[in-house]
Image (cartoon, rainbow, N blue to C red; front, side):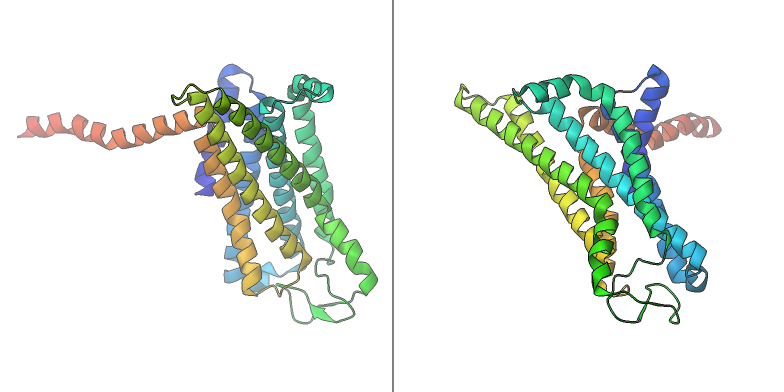
Length: 303
C-alpha cells in the first residue's frame, strides 16, 4: 500500500514537472519524500526476504554493513523530507505577524531546493557512521552482534554508551524536533484562526471553517504518526532489546507502516492529489466496462 501511494505521489509530481518544465515547492518536497519512501519500503522488503531465506548470505560483513548504512540513510531522508514538508506548510499556512516569520514566508520557496539537498547530504554523513560494527550498544560484556555469526563479539565500556547514543540518533533529533515544533505551531495557528472565525460566524456552515478543521485533524494525524515512527526508530537504534525479540519486530512494523499511512493521508489532504486519485480510480473502474462494450459488437456479428 505504501509503495502504491508513494508511487502515485511521485508519478503525479514528476508528470507535472515534465509537462510544465517546472514544479511547485510543495510538489518538489513531495517528490523527494515519495522517492525516498519507495526506496525505503522496497529495501525493507528485500532485507526481510534475504534475512529469512538466505541468512548466511545476508550476514556477510560487506552485505550486512551495506544494508545497515542504506537502511539508515533512507530512514534519515524520509524523516528530513517529512520535516521540511511540515515546515513548508507551517510557513505558508500559519498566520503570525513577527517580521522574521513574514520574511521567511517570502523566502522559503527559493531556499527549499537547497535545504532538500542539504538534508540529503546530512543523511548520507549520518548514515556513514553505521559502516563499522559499532551498532550494538552493550557495556562491559561480550555480546553477539544481531543478525550475525555467533562467534562475532563486541566489547564496549560504559563511557562509550552516551557517545554512541548521541551519534546514532543525531540524524533523528533535528528533523524530529523541527517536525514537532512546526506541526504544533501550525495546529495552534489554525485553532486560533478557527476560534476567531467561529466567533464571527452567522450560523450557517462555513466551508472555510470546515477546511481549517480538516487541516487541524490532518496535521494532528501527521504529528502522531511521525512521533510513533521516531520513537520506534530511536529504540531500534538504541538496541535495548535483542534483535529477534518481539519488540524489535514491532519497531520494524511501525517503521514500515508509517510511510504508508502518512502518504495515504497526504493524498487525502491534498486537493490536487485527491482529485487525481479519484480520476485514476474512475478510469480503472471504467476500463473493464469499455472492454466489454468494445467486444460486444463482435459477438453480435458472430451470432
